[in-house]
Length: 253
Image 1 (tube, rainbow, N blue to C red):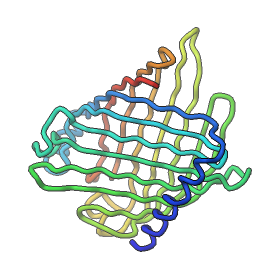
Image 2 (image 1 turned 90 degrees about the vertical axis):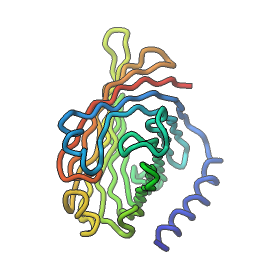
Image 3 (image 1 turned 60 degrees about the vertical axis):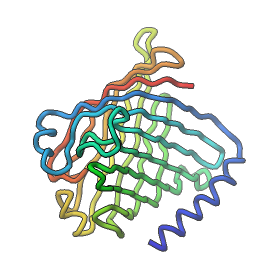
Image 4 (image 1 turned 120 degrees about the vertical axis):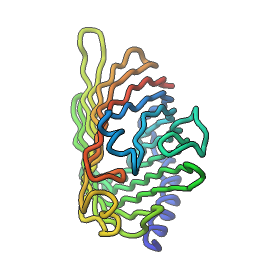
């Protein structure tokens, strides 16, 4: 834990200073989303992780600088329900932040990633925080991007705290037009492996997959609608495939 705190505090000190470097561009949006889990997923998780359908509000943004790039979101899940409702229906709060610090002009970058989700169903507090630190690489071209990373993982969770294996992942996308309409396809994917045995016992084993594939319609400069296929296997507290569809609409500032 000391190692993670040192890394986190160092990044918090470094990144604000770096933000004074040249700003290249960015975006910010607010979105309304609805995750419709498959009936099989809802039924099979009803005794443990309670994957019920839910809506959520999201604030999302990203920025590019001469030194690197930043991305993050904050989700307010089940915002229309009570904080202590039954498991699966309670309000939850989730955030993610990723930073890529360029290592010169090599294409390589120092990859830093934090994720957390919090809830209190029936007043039983739950949290799951993940910290990743490793290396990434940026492949970019005309309308496409592919940004893989390899990172060590530390987990601070209700049921387990400690080093927790590795993650090999990526974000990728391709933008295109059909007639006068603008679209993009995106994918994020994380493959976890060599998990700690204590954590693995509650998540289907030593490895697992988590991610989503999305199709976005950029209807106007300020309005985007999308459909995402959400998937997780040996992840999210279960030992089998969980999947569903996310319906999304975003307003870009």
